[in-house]
Each structure stands twice: as structure tokens, then as C-alpha cells.
Image 1 (tube, rainbow, N blue to C red):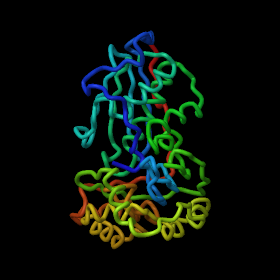
Image 2 (image 1 turned 60 degrees about the vertical axis):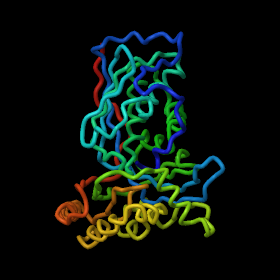
Image 3 (image 1 turned 120 degrees about the vertical axis):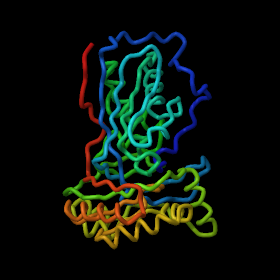
Length: 335
């Protein structure tokens, strides 16, 4: 699980129960042949600066997001009740009840507009599950845009971003993509200029890491130190603006990395293998356990991925370029 998937607790609901936006809310009249498919990207944190724990249990962040070209696809179709299905790598690990951010997105949008969200949400996974790359947040943002389109609501970006912020800390970034600085708990976004493309390799580990557990370990490791207020690194922001991969590599930072390594020491071997293979730099992605490596160019990225695959330190390795667009409608079938 990634840092952006720390969410507000949903209302208590039986996991197997269809949920209505309100007892009197009318269903949307839409033919079952209608559907909307949305593509939404993964992310990498070029910088994740973490402040001390707040009274509400969250941490203030300076979170420099880059959307990367690994995508989940969310298809929403009218149905008799709200339900979620999933396919793809590690799909069995994805919850199919109302704890899933995609389901919660449909519920939140329906409640705001008095709509009974009787839809089938199908998630085609390609973003690593529980890997620190915002897979859950991506699905929430994708379902939100898909339902808004299916129901012909025409919500403004600000309206959708407000719902995203209620769903989770990094769901807003999954909606807009590109590059952005997230402050607060990560939900307040300032778009960032990027002067070129950056080539990344992602080493996917076996199993996931719990984001709350990683934050608790961060709190334990920093319990007797003064945790500074998080700030974006101006050197890193300038490297993004100019498209300078070497300068960006020197500025990559993740305050959660020591906690992730303490919980999963084997990640140190993956980081060593990637840097030895020629990566400009490597770091844990978000709260892990996926590790991310910045490469000089596409050819170097392919070589690093091949070396990681044969190193025995990861389950698989994926190559992707950043920045990538945010949630985008790629197919719409009218009733």
C-alpha cells in the first residue's frame, strides 16, 4: 500500500452489501449497454518529506509527485446494484467491498448529486498492488471520473478534486497527473513544470507493506529527534523544470525509506542491484515495497530492468516514462 492510500474511515457497512446513496435517491436511467472506460496512471514520489505526526494521526507532507506510464483501467457500467470486480496481477489482493476507493468514489459522487450509484465498476490492474505507487488512489480517481461521465454530470475539476481529497491523501493527484507538489497530508496540489521526460524502472517486491505500519515505524524511528517541517527541495524542483535527469537523481529523497527498510530489510539488496546496474539513483517508492530507479535514457532503463530481473532481488521489473497524463476517458459507449 502507498502513502496516498491512507484514507478517512468509511461508514460501517457489511462487506457484501450493496450500498445506496440514500433511501430515496432515484436510480440513474441508463441503458446497460452504456459504459465509460478511464485510464489512470501510477505515481512515483521524487521527494517525500514527512513532518511529525499531527493530532489527527496524519503527517504534514511535502510530496513531489510524478505520474508514470503504468496504468489501471476502470470501466463503469449501469447495474442493478453497486459492485466491484477486478482482474490483473495480484487482483485477489484487491478488496471488492466498500473499502475499495473506487466503490467509495461512486458512493461519494452519488450522495452529492442524489443518485443511487447502481453501477458495476471493473478494475483492470496493471499498477502494482500495495506497492507504493498509488494503485488504490488511481482506482478511486478513475471511478470518480467514469461515474461523472456516465451520469452526464459535467462536474468541474475543482468539484472532483474536492471529492478526491475526501477519499484519500493522494487521490487528487491521480486525477490530475503530470507533476505536482502535494502539501497538507498530500491533497493540496500545486502543478509543477517539467522540462522533459524521465525514464524509470520499478522493481516490484513480493508482498506489500501496510502504509499505517510504515508511518508508525517512521514515528518510532524519529521519536527522540526533532522532525523538521517538510519543504520541497528547490534543487529538485529546478531539475524537474529543466528536465535534468542527473540533477534530479542527486535530489531524490524519501523520508519513509528508513522505515520501509527497517520493516523489509531485503529492499536494500534491490536498491544495491539497481544502482550497480547503472541507475542514476534509486529509492523506495512511497511507503514501499516497490523500489524506483531513475535511468539516463530508455536504453539504460531496459538494461537496468533486465539486470534486476536476473538479480533475484525482486519479483518483476517494469519500465515507464514520466510525466504521464492523469485520469482520462479513453472509451465511452452510449446507451
